[in-house]
Length: 480
Ligand SMILES: Nc1ncnc2c1ncn2[C@@H]1O[C@H](COP(=O)(O)OP(=O)(O)OP(=O)(O)O)[C@@H](O)[C@H]1O
Ligand SMILES: [Mg+2]
Image 1 (cartoon, protein in one colour):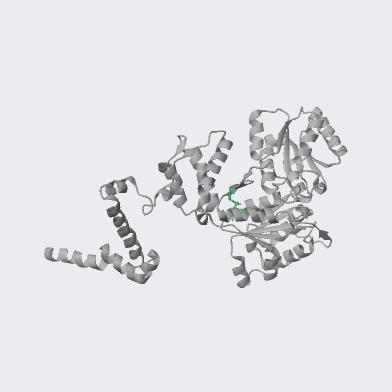
Image 2: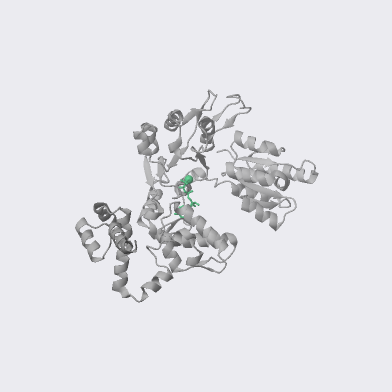
């Protein structure tokens, strides 16, 4: 793999700085890096689209003016590129901001040339690519209930961990399925991270977010003049992922014409850029993800069957959070701790009652929803303990499952047997009403057989609305 560095040098006026950049450049070239220099800030992004860079070194003049947004842009669109910031007037504040935006390192310009070269070499993912076969992750945060930064002890997620370990270091295609927010991308990253390809980038492309016509050139790149507006050649994500992994997110949304091209590119590991004749050979491993039922799309003929089998050599299904509730307490603690580290604060504690409510909640947005909630609570709750009262209403509002203080108070003098009977009555009545008093349906909802239900209705004195109407009529009659 080429080791290509982009030096952004915007201090055209400052002689000493220019000289320093020149020295850095020479030192990098001596170390076999391919170095390009760019003096125009506007030209940086087009350059990143045209060539494959792993590392960018830029100065803080870039950062002060358009640099903040440039760094942000690079982090968003080229997350695999590592940005090193050379600071002319270094400050802690700027250093923190820069690193928060996602810079790889922040180095004062006064740092010796050798040290700058060292930082650059560290920014390159381990260079001994061909020398090692197995990947050593023994240093990682790993125990039975944590796999890198994936947390979970439920049998369901443990099975996912085992699959990742088994298949990561192969070249098989993997299709990751699961509802939104279940951790599909996190799993894809773990697979890439545990593969021998982990010193090349994992490139992500969201097939659902990019319109059809653009998606092809995003994937395969285009040549100069391929279409109006194609002023320069541009490499596609397939090429960027050469030696690494290409993660096709929301693959279920890809148009049928593009599906054909993708299938061919995967099978042959070669393709042409849009508007180009030259065939480009790559060595790219394909991971994809979807929250759709792809098999149903195959049946509906909106997704090609041959591509489906090609992508789905190894399926990984990530269950919804509501189907692995035993992970919830662990995830709560994990997120509270993580936010605390970020806020440089002590992790918030949380009461058992609050945890119980969070376990009972259905989590339609899955882990992403839980993560966001823990972040919000960490920031908003003033004391050091999260209590039931701090939880959002839609979590607390579950009177059928957890009793409010008021309900407990009303039940206090009933004692166990009466209270249980009372709850049997309210629970059954609500569900029978939901079933519109169709007893077969109600029995189904209550998971009772019909005869038992009829007995219960009698025993618990549950009255149908019709009976109530009758009663009301009788009460009203004498009044009239
Ligand atoms: N098991 C887990 N342990 C810790 N964090 C997790 C876990 N699963 C998911 N997350 C976190 O939850 C968030 C959502 O995960 P991710 O983006 O991977 O979901 P997704 O399935 O790709 O969602 P979508 O379909 O909406 O793209 C991320 O911030 C991720 O880090
Ligand atoms: Mg995703």
